[in-house]
Length: 125
Length: 169
Image (tube, rainbow over the protein chains, first blue to last red):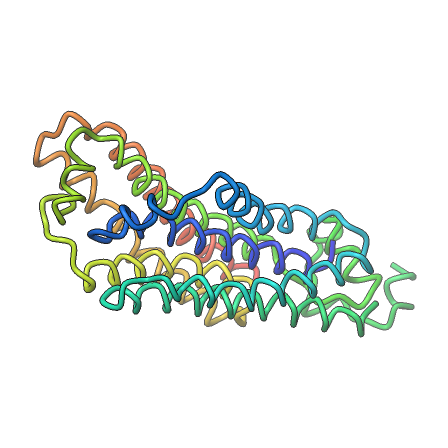
């Protein structure tokens, strides 16, 4: 197994840990839980579950898929997550937004590194 | 050994003899892949063990009686919830995640020392929560101690794997 696949798998788990950290941590923000409960719908929960399950699935798939499809799946989903993650920060209360931004920076960097490692692997193929 | 010489790569510096039995390393010799040593992968996984311990502790804590009431009233673990506290927790959680990536990407020497230092720091840090629960003599100290022990062992293993890699370098 090539190095870039292992690195990408680890980076996807980093993205996933960030997602979980934000969703666990935001329950502590005073008054924020009530807001979330007020906005929750079954469709939203299903959508969140799909989005949240993508990084761990990609961690596994990047270790198992064949080179070409592996590379493109990682590049496409890396771009999707690099774009989606900052959008999630918007809903945070202003006082606590620094933590959300910090976590999302790590997630965006991890997504960009996924794209970078996947792209770079083309030369060696 | 003939095929190895034909591949145009020397076996001297990058590969050790024991690596010939390792499938990834053999592929690296025959192909052109750069080598990623096993100890780096092990350390990366151990950092995730620590990060997950923290997340599990945060997620399970909600089931403790009185915990949710405390959060609604604006306090957690007996202290007020402030933006500074959340930021500190975010930093402490992000360190293992960043270290997992760095342990796969950094150069050998700095990788090793960073892991030894960060591993030693976390070996102390992860004991803070169990000690707090045990001194309070909380009825819920068992699960925190269990998570703490797993995290502590993971930290010690990080230091150990990083230290042991010195011999092979």
